[in-house]
Image 1 (tube, rainbow, N blue to C red):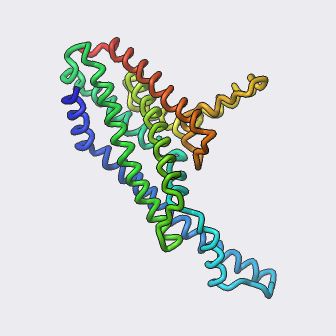
Image 2: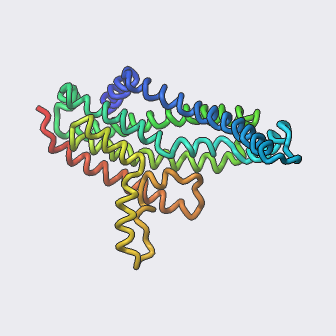
Image 3: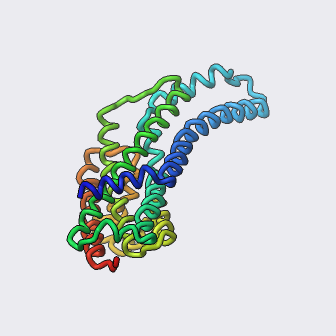
Length: 274
């Protein structure tokens, strides 16, 4: 098992797609702060133009405007910017990478060389989950760096108002991302098509399934249960996890992770490789 894990990690770190995806993600995280900063300047110019057009005598000065902006941003910290990254982009990047990574083994026949015995196929699944975990940690590190850059760009300092809340938030995001990765791995083994997995993965990442879950909710209004609350992506988009969310998020992330991996293992055992 450890040899298969080492082989998969080696393959991941030698993959061009891995570094390209991480570069795109890093650019995205840095762009968030720059865009917000530019919007602040545009807001000032628009406000001043409006005041001039209305011939108001109480137009605020530029220094007063930026003072107001600084006061408004005082509660914006690293966690706020990281929550933006988990809206869609993190899982979208993961869907693209895992589709390439997993399906390439089937396309090239590489899988024939690493699992000669049917009983060893569980090792392949464990290795894919380890790869997913490392991928998530790398993206989280890049996202954290981008979030610190954004807060420094806006406030002139790196603000982490509640470290404990940030740790809890990131911990839950790791669990949800792992369950989403398990779904992409299952799709890869079911379809064996990069294009199909990428397409479905992107649609899932942008939370298209919430539309169908919302329709189903309309038919079960007589209950207190909302199906959208049990969507992986819907939960990952929460800007903060309150104590009331803990039980549901744990149930969703661990439950989906276990179920998807069970089906992946069943699929692997039945998969014709030779």
